[in-house]
Image (cartoon, rainbow, N blue to C red):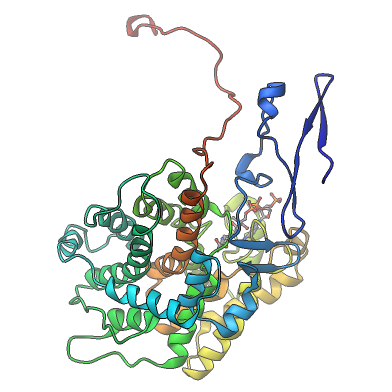
Length: 430
Ligand code: ACO
């Protein structure tokens, strides 16, 4: 039994329970604070706020630890696949062979979009950002399938909707890529595994199937797996926020896509490549950019560096850096952007500015280079992140739905606006 926390407020001592997680993380449960004292806590950007308890993912940012359902990310990256990991995240344990087969069959069963959904693609302009198409199409898909009613118990509909979402997000992504290029749509092939099928829908043409190189399939599968969950980040918190109102799975996931889009979150992988291209175009070897990224006046940042929770290293970046090197060698690709990236990394890791602020490369620093090598266009990078993150969002959605006592998410604020004043009629406003 942990001793309660005690705080003094206006001369009064308030006792608050302490919650200890299974990995020893400690939190002061302040949910009763306002009732007993009139105070709330203020934590701009939620950097020190636990919004929930969760059994899905554990991160120790100081030690560079990431585990899905207790299993270290390094083990999953080395031995699992994206789809097996998706099962682990959503259902809480590794599947037996039959369970994995059933899950895989469900994904195949639901890989095609409802035919009428195809007409939606025609309404988007060819320059539309694929993240806009993705969120709109995921949301639209809730119109096409029954059993999506608000507040339904999660099973049996949940398994189908979860499989449909994981499977179709990849179909939507590939269709939107081909639509923006004016290319004919390629349908999925049931015989292909998940990631191979995505590459097929992206790059095959009606007369010639895309050659599926195992190292390419594996590298992309690894990117999906490494992005599959990351506890209460901006997009996952958004999914939980929307789900807490008992909105359906598709609506919650579509909101997650929007939150992921920004360059400070999922959009960073696109921003990294754009930054590297800018550096290359300007003839800089990276050293000038490092100086600029330290100068707050120009608003530049070293994209792909820094993380809200990792203050030592991002374990995903370590894994993906290695894959990036191996893949480029195997495909015999000489990418000058990779040279700039390595120079930036080397310089930043020795620079006091980055050391003092504990800014290390994050997963996005290398994932963009891999995707570029595979031939995925830059504007689709964040969509790849969204495909990978879908199991994590679904697992968090399920956790909210399964938890009988979840309350609607509703933070408070401290108001700093004008105090009471009166409405002035137009004629008297001067
Ligand atoms: N380049 C230069 N300076 C930086 C960077 C960076 N990439 N990141 C943070 N800093 C500086 C800030 O200017 C600030 O400096 P100050 O203390 O002198 O004011 C200090 O480091 C702390 O930065 P915050 O913005 O307060 O850190 P926060 O935890 O809020 O932000 C974030 C984390 C958004 C990831 C930030 O590091 C960043 O913008 N990185 C670049 C974008 C990026 O790579 N995002 C991907 C994140 S990983 C993911 O979503 C998968």
